Amino acid sequence: MSVAAPTPEISLTRSRGRELSAILALFVLTIRQHTHGRRLLVLGLLYALPCALAFTLRMLSRPAPSEILEFALVFNLLPHGLAPLTALLYSAGVVQDEVEEQTMTYLLIRSVPRWALYVTKLLATICVTSAIVAVATLVLYACIYFKSPELAGVIFPGRVARVIGIMTLAQVG
Image (cartoon, rainbow, N blue to C red; front, side, top):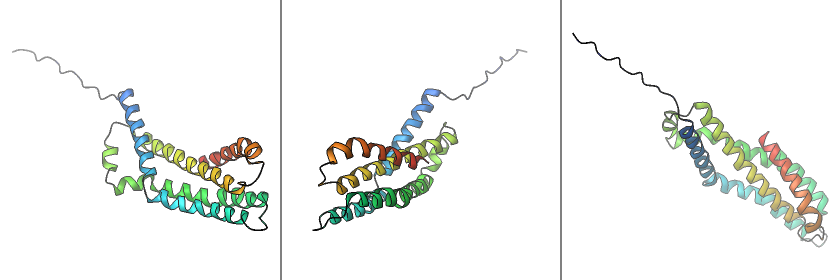
């Protein structure tokens, strides 16, 4: 009788390089998924409404004061109405989009841990919603102060950057 050679054990360890590559690919695909869709078009139209209102109120024979428009539209409407709506629409679709496109099973059988899938999709969603709110804030400030002499000197380099930073932090929260 001959003695059989011991069978080598197969190790099922994950490769860090492949795992990071898969996470990066998922991040890019999630951003692409969020930026190509009706959601972005509808939100663009919703964000255009305050811009049109500000522009119209500034074009009147007796224009509305810029400070009042800034307070009402930038500091009240954006953070209390449109920014939370943006976060809600995109975050609610993080998993639902995968279920609708029937790609959830494909994601879950990959070698990436489940928590990494969800965290990656959440980070991509935060990036997209923060970018949408930042662009909307920039355009809204341009519509509010478009005839003002302080637009280029005071508003855009300083105030807009600070407000965009605050809005981005609010979106993360």
